[in-house]
Image (cartoon, rainbow, N blue to C red):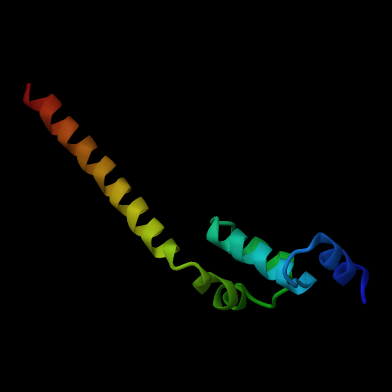
Length: 90
């Protein structure tokens, strides 16, 4: 038994491997918006496309976050235009 497996067993957590930790770290980094080139370099992948192919599809909620961010940006832009138009009318 490796030192890592022994530590996991003593900790009483479900079976996990160093590769699982690597996968989790990369997935969370991509989901949090980390620069994909930086994640690619961290993992030693040959291309950013490979990194995205493996890790980017893990979080379904990311599409909702993108939608919310775009909606927020459009709302702010619309509000700015309405303010500018209203200011010139007075």
